[in-house]
Length: 179
Image (tube, rainbow, N blue to C red; front, side):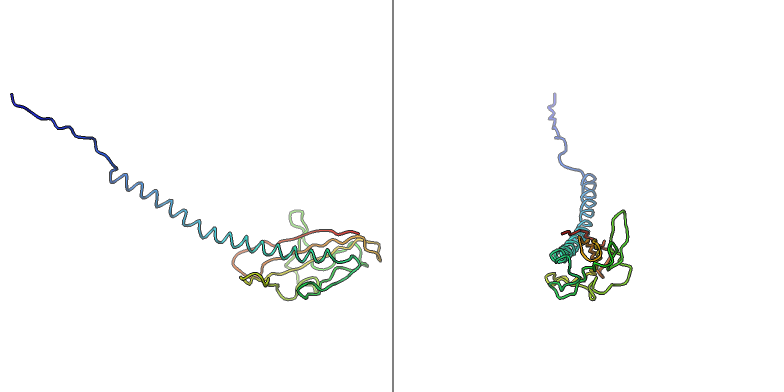
């Protein structure tokens, strides 16, 4: 009887060419999706930094307003601007920049013209910000009192970026100081 040798073949190991193509396409789609997120993330980071810079400046300016005695009608701020603080005679009226109500919140109306001494005549640029972004700063004051004696002042300060690409939401700070 002739002798026959049976050779056992091992099952194939590894991936087929088709499986490798599918895996490559899936990885490529994921890589493209992530690559699109990088510029969007950089832009969002820039806008957040810009908003933070505007908020910090607005808070610094508002703190200077709050540090003044209630009887003062104006003062010169740290960067040399004459800032009006409202008069005692027209009680409970808006003095300064025009206001608007948006979503039940009182905000500065930036569509109106600038009011002298209740806004910066030239756009403000933060000297510590290397990007050199300009901001439009305006405020309004509501004085409460009896006509000669001031009992409280409500400051509404708005700031928005000028120029740049896209829309930048204005920032409004609203606070009251009392005796």
